[in-house]
Amino acid sequence: MSRSATAAPPALPTPLRPPIGVAAVLAALVLAALSAVYAAGGALGGFDGRAQPLDGLRPPLRDVALVIDFCGEPVGAAVLLAVLVTACLVLRRPRMAVLAVAGSGSTVAVTSGLKRVVGRTIHGDFLSFPSGHTALVTAMAIVFALLVVNLLWPGTPSAVLLVLTAAVMAGAAMAWSQVALSAHYPTDTLGGLCAALAVVPATAWLMDRTARPR
Image 1 (spheres, rainbow, N blue to C red):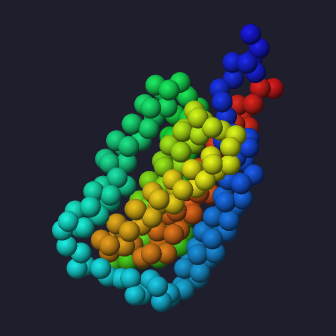
Image 2 (cartoon, rainbow, N blue to C red; image 1 turned 90 degrees about the vertical axis):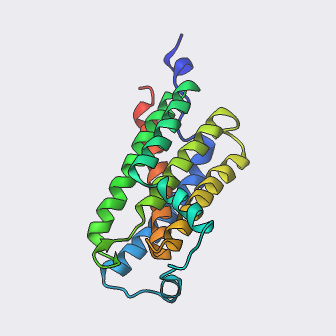
């Protein structure tokens, strides 16, 4: 049997590369622009200023926000990642399992590095931009959506909509919790969302290119 016949499906299906690539580039540009503004000492925008702080959140909404926040904490994120990797392996998609780890890890590395470069803080000395919680959960949501696409309909327009919707919904949920708990400014969470949208597709593309039969 030929190598092409036994090759694993691509992490980022070919029909999805142009539209997802465009989304990734736009996200990277937004992230770069916000990073430049805040690294240069840009003040809070009106939206950020109006949204902080929201310390008056009460149960049950506060409990919901804390549960969502836990998904971005080390223990919660590790559990989610383990479940995602296990699902990929059970469904015989080892490349997606690698993407789950590599994509999430790369996203964490990018956000951690940018925090130090940008230097934006909240509540004293806590580095805030971009939001690592938002970025990490969004990254895992993108990988999960790509897994579903990989299994069901890699070549249809609805696949693009699924991936982008999963990213936005996961990012929006975490963004709400971070702002509601006064852990981040709204634009911090936008930066986290953009980081995941830029990094995960790029990681998937690099993996597919590296794994291409020669």
